Length: 416
Image 1 (cartoon, rainbow, N blue to C red):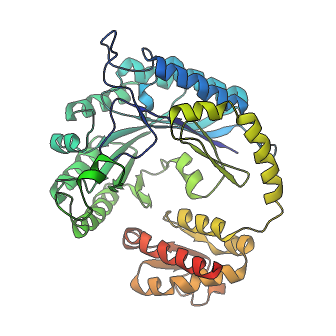
Image 2: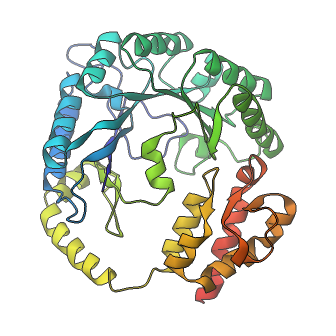
Image 3: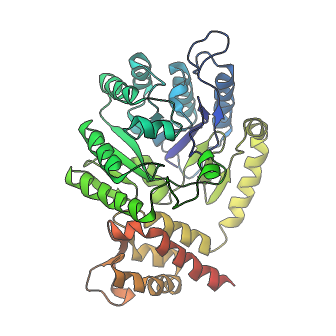
């Protein structure tokens, strides 16, 4: 067990597209008038105490005594934490599990929520990679998305990050926003490249029913871009970013050589990880455990972790006697096919059996003909001759949902 995800659920406001488990704390402290953050919010301070309590109560997996190789502070807006709170969480992780000397320690940060002194403090505490939530480089699109920062604050944030000594910097962008044009998207990509990040994540907007966007808009209907436009946005990102030297290594992610997100690869390779905090999910010894998505439910849950740990241990002992299920196979396919290199066939056969992988291969055959699926070596016809299978880039990535839905239907049919 070499990875840990830390969920920090606080935001000054909820973005209109967000359905994550977050808690809105507002822009300013009602008593002091200062901008709200972990140094003046009792709500945030209380959460960090419960978070550290949960970490201390997590028993390390007996088969893995190595220190953590990756830690990821996600949210929410982790940059609302005070420097001392980041240090407190990292110190607790180090005491309980150990942190490797070369660990990747990432933090999501939002423009307008930190200054140079604060981001420098995070760096001194051990954070060595930041993911800046830019989303767009147009003021009207930032406002339309409910972002709490301005275009000017984006540039100020990047300057502060560089000044703090960070060299591993990721930027997040969103395509398919209301009123967003193909020209807007191309401009955002070009402006992002001009800031010289080592990593860029490009997410296509998903309109979730429970969000503000879900109440206002219907997918495919203006002012949302058409499906054809969003598909072209995806192709445009691939063309512009790869031409600029970024490797399109995962469906939504691009990186300079040597700068792929090590933590996120843990998820895509379906490896185990600890998850801590409200709404977080852990993957420990084959058992996935989701924490409650509401604050007080989470606090109550933390108080019962020891009991839950005993139940989990008994469940793990029972699961170890079972053969891998189709659910595990589908998880492996869904995650592994997101990566540019795809999946090696031999390990799949060893883990799930030849019969199951033959069914996968047969279901994917039509997509090889459309050019969405590729195999290595290219000349292979029979499954026994295939060493690796992957989605093509960018077309297979673009239509990955179609391919994966077909695979899920195959095994749902087989279970009935």
